[in-house]
Length: 79
Picture (cartoon, one colour):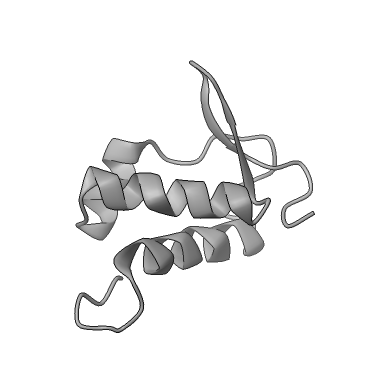
């Protein structure tokens, strides 16, 4: 879970938790990640925090967003 008292920003914590789920194979390549609403409820954070986390995951090359379709785990995460 996220630690609101940590010096690490909440969005980085959420991104790291989702990245771990990808690395562990819980979220498979070319499959959607949980929706913003699901991530918001799961981690107890605001929608803006989730959006920043997903943007960070995109920058890391772990996910790709398809307009009007959703966000999916990249075929080769991290590459």
